[in-house]
Image 1: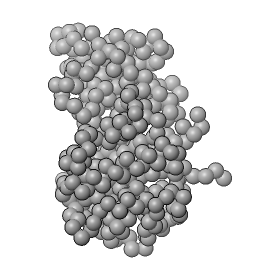
Image 2 (image 1 turned 135 degrees about the vertical axis):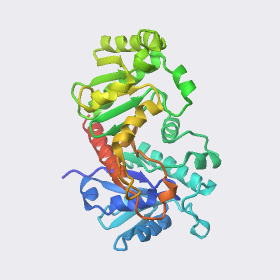
Image 3 (image 1 turned 180 degrees about the vertical axis):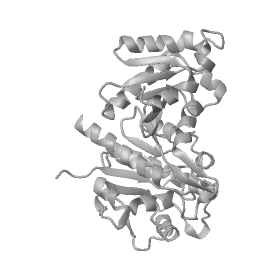
Image 4 (image 1 turned 90 degrees about the vertical axis):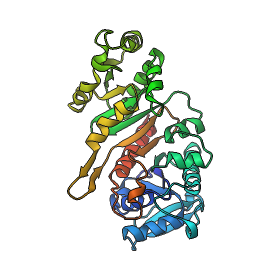
Length: 346
């Protein structure tokens, strides 16, 4: 029997729901049947999370090298960074200490993956304000991974069930996002989307490209980016043998993709791609004042290593309550295994 894939999972911001949902995910025996998981974080914080979630039967195994991990159900192996002092630690708040810790967890899991000590990486949420207060000036995980792996061509992909979205731009202002819709970048993202689908086992991916403007510009009436930048990129992709259609009006393309018309959608900017995914994956129960489901994943494409993340934030308002949903984290782990297996077999 082949050795199970090793998945490095960051704890996320220590003050967030990350430690708690990690405990919940590790409390599911099926996780250990799928892979050999290890947490990159602080053992002391994870031990506190066990109490919050109510899992006294699970123990923490603090390690300082991956080879010391047990990978046994009932034990959470924690690559212990020892960065958080619980004597002055406060959950649910933005702090320099937590921002620094969250950044170092990410940096370490990247290093472990580049060294081949883990087969894929999964990230819990960090707080952008906190990491910037700590002196690490990034707009999110995607940019950290790109920088530390020296990757120039990359893109963010969101996935929920059969709906997948990859972005031309992400963490920039809407004004700047419009300026970034250029033929070269749109073509680059179409190519990245095509490869991502192939890596997921889709034999002949069909790609839908969203327009930037209402009605995809209506032949220049509402903007000319489609005519000048997007259509030329689509035509070039077609010449390369990629099955691609567009530009398709943004208000209809996601319904078509959800219905199976496209395997993946190329969105022009952050909110255009994020909103439809989160409408589907995030289910809020108004009567009970809680989230019934928080699912979906965030994948950084184009990297030399695999990175999949939860598709939600730090949820400081829920930290310490032990009620946050681990569904997105479990989705992320499953996706990381799928991608790692594909990489291993190719």
